[in-house]
Image (cartoon, rainbow, N blue to C red; front, top):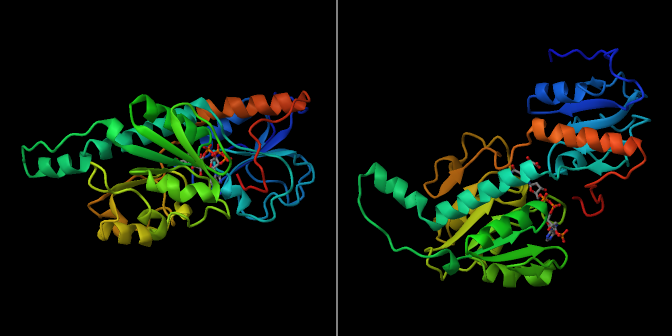
Length: 325
Ligand code: NDP
Ligand code: OXD
């Protein structure tokens, strides 16, 4: 990595030093923005480097953080933290995740885009255009369609409100009871089947935890409502790939349990070139790009949190380790 890991003599040393550990993405911009205010290294000086105060991470190498004696907090550069907790040696320090208007806006745009595309028959029109077919299918209104959002957290709630404002009937499902204006809410195991039975377009915005892994399977998809003007149930997953069973989605698409799917996340990423999902006519694929973490927006928030923490204020947007999100 062509970056200067040496301490910048202009950076006040009283400020906690940052270890930046990003896997599978370009760290340059994150580095530049963080290094504008603090000393940043991309490798600790040995497993027990005492100079590291904070770690800013995406899929950090296993064991990287386990023995840093003065590590005070870990910052995820994303909203999800499964990539951090996948390493069982992660030390017991606070983990801060991303909650930011910019990221939320990206996700709301993606969800609204995909819901509207399915609702307004985008796939059908794309096929018609390739064949130069001038035919208008029956048109429904948003009020005829129920969108069900699994995960009513920061992102799910924002997406639910945007869809409700467009006139869709919106259901939401979460672990604990939630109330949200204009949304019919369901919670926990007891609420899951009633939620699915009342949902035409399922939007998955759950975190990946031991409780949610693999839950978007054939049995769950079977519970979706299919007596709607859409011509079948639709799945949109922008949460995590390992929430779903790719093979079950294919089976559901092929036997009509699902009409279409928009998938941003996959059990294995990048999606292997051999996956039939790439070329399936009923599947719309994006490369885990529903809501990109933009360092220009997110680094100032992280730096402000570090400064506030050093003034003695509590960290915000902390992960509940027991719940896994
Ligand atoms: P939050 O932590 O704010 O919300 C999570 C929601 O999921 C909460 O409503 C929570 O319930 C619910 N939930 C968690 N576990 C369960 C469970 N076992 N059963 C039912 N509901 C459950 O997360 P965000 O909204 O900020 O983000 C959601 C996820 O989106 C992230 O974890 C990440 O995986 C994904 N993501 C994907 C991106 C992409 O580009 N594809 C970008 C950003 C995020 P409760 O309200 O009761 O706590
Ligand atoms: C996230 C992501 O968790 O981009 O923020 O997947």
